Image (cartoon, rainbow, N blue to C red; front, top):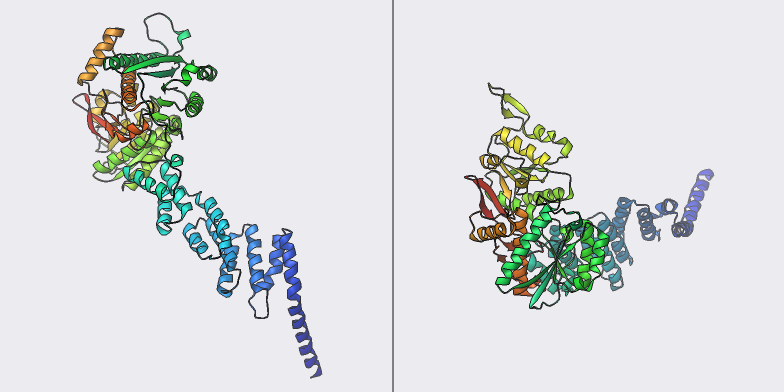
Length: 570
């Protein structure tokens, strides 16, 4: 009996000793935490995290245990412990700090809605700056407009969400609704408009406008013979533009067109840009190559001079420069409009996409796929095809399962008429000819959408465009019977003694367009161009710059009766 009582006394003594050790254990844990020894700190704090009315350090130990776990990237452990604190210690005076760290972890886990909800529980105003900074860093990582729209709907007065939504929309305004949405956000949150909608200076008019054409004419290498030159496409474009200048002059629109031979040399280009003549020019056409464009972009922004690329589909040429334009639709516009076209014309909404390895091809394909899915089109497959691996196209589309008596395939692994459309996002003839050939072999009703640039290669027989019903995005389409086109072609033939090429037509059309814009809207024609809506072309179908700085009017054509024919324009 005495031994039993002695054991009881020892246990009571040990319990009292353990109670006394709470202070020491907590102090040891804090010291380890301050020294960055987070694993040891967690071990030390762990016995103290147990809820006990005699343990005054339960909430504090749990909190530092969670922070030590966070610093070791054990976010799930930290989150669970912080949540437990809220449950076991609902009246603890440091709950605002608990919610702050919990919000931080939720943001890092990309649980944006729960993070915002948790931070909203903090009423202590001393946390306002830290909360604002936390939201600013994490909301800035959201690039999906729909996620931001849902957050904005949930928190309509939050300026961080509003600003990020405005920035995301501003990168790619594609409709009048988005333009209105952006304007509303700018007004609501008192944002600096120029940061979201780049603006040119106030426009003004002149008696004569100077236009600089910066192309690689390579004049020093040209021979005097009448044969085709190595830079013939550049020369043709320039000749077409000069005829437009002559036509404009008869309309009392005075343009001084000056040619600068860049010789594909950045150093030569930089020397031109140092001249006062170029600093006083009103518009730059070109240059053609990316390494040159970067230099001229900087010059354009610094000197507030508009520039336009006649052939490129790359928005890299535009960047954030409010003075830069594409005469052609961008790859993004082509992809988006192609998806819209198919969505409105497909009987059954499914599609396969083939694209090449270039940046333009992947951008075109990605934009098409995103818009197609939004419009309810099912993407059955998306395939990047390398020019050395074009046999993959046949493997996908024409692997035969049945043959007729003449050994021609009559059924395939991908059954006839089970695929209703194909979008080909490349101008590489090694790739698109394989897709065209596969469509011919399949001999079914699949709609094939490609590019007008295929016509320039002459690798697909023209009659196949008609027999296969191929549809082409055709920004430079012009009616062969158009009176203005006929007049230009006659004038070109009289002047140069040869038929006008497509590049000569492009030079004429671009110069007629910019000449008239300068005349109507002045040196900074941006605002007038945006307000003009759809502008009729002179020999093309026209232009639309309402929602961007690339031409967003895309004609779709096919061949009928041996002639390229307009289906519709979007």
